[in-house]
Length: 137
Ligand code: HEC
Image 1 (cartoon, rainbow, N blue to C red):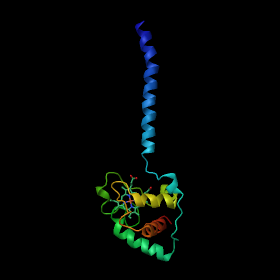
Image 2: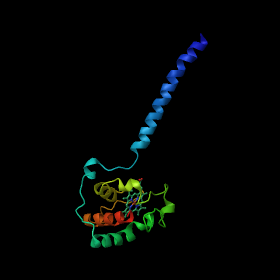
Image 3: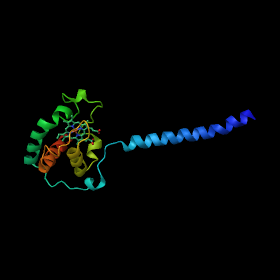
């Protein structure tokens, strides 16, 4: 009868392990940085033109380049101090996101990336977005 007990426990153990695995994978999935749905729908009020791109570039060089690198490849001089390697700003993941979502991310920041809400005006945040979009072209 001893054997019977072990056999009966194995499926339970397997089930418990599966639950733990599913919970873990779900947690890993949701920890990916994403903006609230309402923010994703916000349209970019600053048309991407020579002026917005030029203004955006100035902001990028002074506030963003140290981490994200000259071409947005995640290789700025401060990038080596970050715990995780930066995703390039011309990645497929970036292209898949709306302007509203990226504007929200730039505004809010996420440690170690600083929030730009207090340092840049709304217009400036859209301009820097217009600029980083050109890095993907
Ligand atoms: C201190 C270094 C640092 C600075 C300065 C910085 N960032 Fe970031 N940035 C990060 C990190 C780290 C992430 C990734 C955050 C995460 O996903 O956990 C990130 C993510 C982003 C993302 C999202 C990328 C994606 O794939 O979703 C955008 C857009 C972005 N940064 C733009 C900017 C802009 C624009 C500036 C300047 C106004 C800036 N960053 C300044 C470190 C920095």
